[in-house]
Image 1: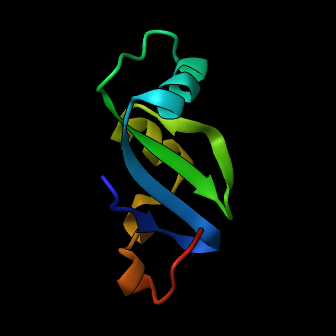
Image 2: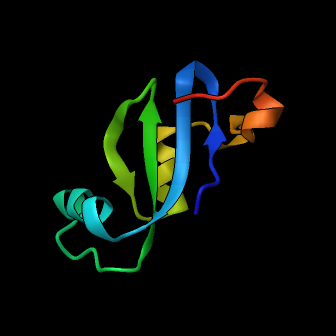
Length: 80
């Protein structure tokens, strides 16, 4: 997938397909997570934010200010 958004305070949101480690971590959040689903990995300064993985935009909105998310070029800096 490779694309991601950044937000204030070191927030990074990356869509991921659930395979390998992503699937294992997502199943810690929801045991019903299935291979191939697309979820969001959410970090702040490199550490998991909240559960670290969320299934949909509604859950994402509970963790991060969606209106403040930008592409890395728009934000002016890459984040880890």
